[in-house]
Amino acid sequence: MLYILIALNVFLLLLIGLIIFFVLKDRDVEKKLREELETIKKVYDEKTNLFKEEADKAKDLANISEQNYDAIQKEIDSIKIEYENKEKTLNDNIEAKIKELSELEETAVKRAEDRVREYEKSQKTEIEKNMVDLVINVTKKVFEKSLTYEDHKRIIEKSISDLKMDD
Image (cartoon, rainbow, N blue to C red; front, side, top):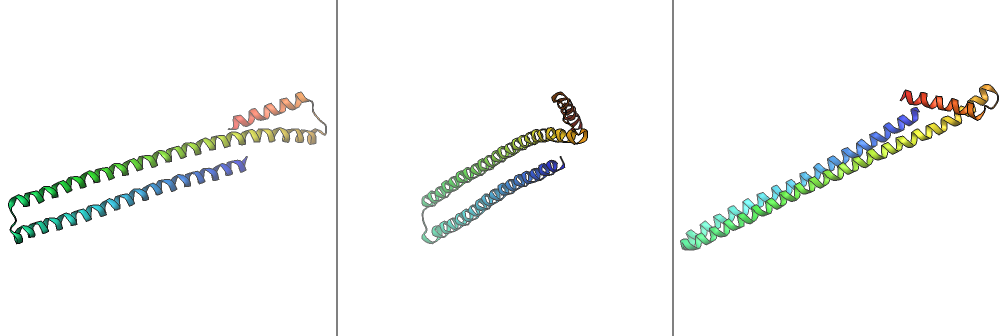
């Protein structure tokens, strides 16, 4: 009985280790995605600033008309809107991946819990079966004779009910 409890404890520890592994992996993926997004933001800001500076220089140097300057400003604004849309899409994708990973984790935990319950049930059945063999062998040695089927049945049922009360 002690070996079974030890085996169950080891199995549960392994299960907890797997759950922790998946949670840490999810965090790494999210961190990488957020870092990529920050890099994209920095590049965008740098390019936008450079573009604005170049537009200002071009206006000053070439004395371009106010109308052309407004067109360039509109282009900058449309690029900014496009960037914001892409940023929103990236954030939505990150959230979707996080949700998907969370659902996978929940499914894995449920499967593991089901396996633990099945394992416990099979081990209890195995213990009861071994108990029957043990009782028969012990009674033969103690009484130095075989008992009747009814005697065995009564002893076994009492032992099993005592075991169940101990649980």
